Each structure stands twice: as C-alpha cells, then as structure tokens.
Image 1: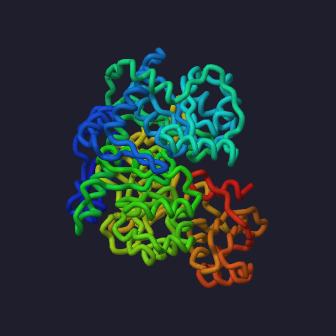
Image 2: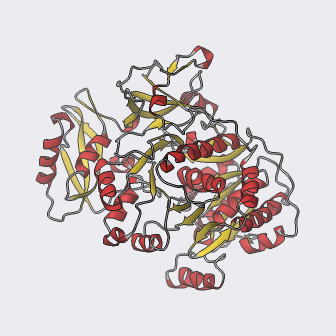
Length: 565
C-alpha cells in the first residue's frame, strides 16, 4: 500500500491506485521544464518549426507560422498599454484565429478569458464584466452580441475576424457563402473595431517584450457554472496547465506500450477550444508534443465532420459520449478506419452501450477520463492499454490524490459513496474575486470538493454515481440519473435519454425519463417494460416523455436543469 500524509493535519490518503498504474507511468509528477505556457510555445515552435500545427477547412499553419503570428498578436496587444495580468477575451469557434489569438495573449503576459460564441448578451455581459476584460477577439458572426453589451463592460479594444480570413483565396468564397448565402452574420456596428489582418500587419512592425511570466501567474480565467449555476471564473495558472498537459503526456505513454508511437501525432479537435477539455488535451498537450490538430468548427454537422475525418489518419480523438453516439448513428461512419486511434472521453459519463458499440465499429475502446474546469481539467483516466471498458473514471493521474469524503469531510472506506475530493498541481488557485465561493470548495488540507458523488474500488478505480444536485431521492433512497440513462440506452429503440426527479406527494420525488426515439414505433409501455427488467422498483421511471431532441450545451452535454424547467 502507498500512503501519504496530508498537510494541515488532514487524513492520510492511501494511494491504492498506484498498484494499478502502468509500469511506465510515474506516481509523481517530475519538475516542470518551463516557467510559463509562453515559454513552452516558443520552444515548441523552434523544435517543430516545419510541422503542421493546426488545420482548419483545408488550410494549415506550421509551428513556424504559429510563432510568427502569435508574436504579432502579442506585440500589438502590448502596444495598447495594457498591464501584465490584464484580461483579454476570445470569442471564436475552432478556426485558425483562435489558437493564434490565445497564444498571442499569453505571450504578451495577459490572461485569456475563453467565451462561448453562442452566449446570449446577458451571459456575455456577465462574463466580460466579471473578468474585467479590456479587449476581445470575436468572429464576425457573433459581433452583434458584443455590440449589445460593449458599453456596459471595460472592453475598449475589439478585434473582429471572419470565417474565411486566414484561408487565402478560398476565404473569399467562404465569406460570401457565410454572409450572403447562408446569412449567418447578423448586422453589427462597432465603431473603432480592428480587423484581424490589420492587427497582424501592425504587430509585425512592433517588438514583443518578454513578459517575465512565472508559474504562479494567471494564464486563463475559465468560466464554469460549478454547483451553483452562477458562472464563476476558475483561476488557472501557468503552472496548473503546464502540470496537467505534462500529466496527460505521461499517461498517454500507456497507449504505446504495445505499438510504436508515430513521429508526429494527429489529433481530432472537435470539441471547442474555449472548453477546458479541448484547450488542454488538444491545444496545450498538442503544442507540447509538436502534434497536428485538425480543427472542426461545427462538429454538429455530422456528415461534413465524417467527410473531414475520412481525409486523415488520427492518433488521438478527444470527445463526448453524445458526439460518439451521433457519429455511430450515421452510416458513413462505419467506413472510417479508427482502429489505431486512441479515443478519450470526458465531460460527461460514457454509457456502456455506446462504448461497446464504438469498440465493435472501430476496433478500439473509448478511454474515459474525468475532470472539471477547476482541475485544468483532467484528474483521472483509465489506462489507454486497457482491453475492456471499465465503466469508471479510472485512476488518479500522476501527482494527483483522490479522497472520497462524507458531507462532514470525513474520509470514507472503499466502496462507500461520497464526494470525490481532488488534490494535485492542476487544481485551480481559486475562483476569480470570489473568496467565499473558493472557501466552499477548497478544504484546509488542499482538496477541491468536486460536487460529484462516487466511490473507489479496491483497485483504485473511481466510479461516479452522479452530481450532488442531480441525485433523485425516492422514498429515502438515492437514485442516480446516470444509471437510469445507461439502462435506457441499452434499448435498441432509444437514441438518447435523460432522467430527472420530479415532485411526488407519495415518495417525495419520482423519476421522469425523457426519451429520443431511434425506432419510431417505440412506445411508453416498451420503455417501462425495459426499465422494469433492469431496475429495481424505486429506480424505475414513473413518467416517460418523448422528445425529438434533448437540450444540450454547446459541447454536447445534456442539460438536465433545462428539463426540470
């Protein structure tokens, strides 16, 4: 057994998960080689200069290009008179301008505030005001939203770009289609805004000054709803993110225990770069390894996405359960060769029927990991060399401790359900300007209270049973929606399902299941009979509602709170 004493007189954590580690993965994280993400980028751009770094809509930029363009962005930002640590927002989907802007901001010594482009004006205003952002980079499709809130924020510099701006001659055609044919660019007017190309041109004539960044400096404010639903900025330092991408690199080694690793890794980047999962797993780890990221601007266009996947061979495919499910329900997907692709899932629970079907169709298992914005994000993962789907979130990765605790903060024995608490170098520094909220989630001995309920087995693998707030209480019994949804997904006539609790005068709460049909002939009686055969009585859905689709976040996570109304 492996034990470690906790600081501040906390309980001793028994690291039983180390017994299940691959031999080539270290228990602890080695010292970080770089002082900042800016230093990491600069080194990678020299080391991998001629390799493609990012590709979008058929246009690629090399690491040499990335170095040149990010220097220009950084130099221009410094010329505005911003101070080290000032916040700059990025409001774009997965286009080449996104990583160029984000890395340019970091190289200049500023903090990136990632913004969901689909935000409403109310949501955008909250994030810009809360972060105190002084500038914003935005795709023109969403400039009308920025226009509506600008006067209520500290933003004084707006840089607008177009979908086709970096695509050469093809870009003119893309912009014409987006603007005139599909009419995806609502009218907007922002006096004094700058174009992305003009910023690059001006930045080319300016020097980029060393920002003197250290690991403790803030790199990103990553906004998250957390357990309260009020968006808070998780403070992620350069050291947090350097640690997490290194932890991921070490863990990735388990994918190449029994096969050679390619000289350059190719990543699918279908999840948006403003989401912490893609930011760290695709962009930061990709840059560190000199990998090539294929940026997918609209993964919801499944036919176009599959067509793009067919043009390349991939080594790493991070995604979500809903994305994998949607891909497999398109007949063209079966023609792809993903047998050598390491598929990493996070963001939401992977349902066993989806994992088993993926393995059958691709020949490879989905490797489920786990994390949150507050943990940069990855805290645990299954082994890449596993020959089965574990149904768990895997093992705490190098340098990370898990402790399952009750509501009083007491450590629980193996097998007992409690809150998953996480400690490691990737855990955030706190919530931006919210010390009270930070105090609620950080324990005196340095653990982050995740708000997720789970248990650890004797091998050190952790199983999530659900979010605290999603738990349903039926006649005093805890019912976890993930279990109901996984059972529902086993039915061949069900495409997707989501479970919530609704008030019931007899049992306190009752289970209601929302179902999207795969088979049009599916009936309520069919669903109830299937659940009755697989769930004990108190867990069975009392109410079934059929929907044509389920509400989802922009990264594909099912939004149970919207189903509750």
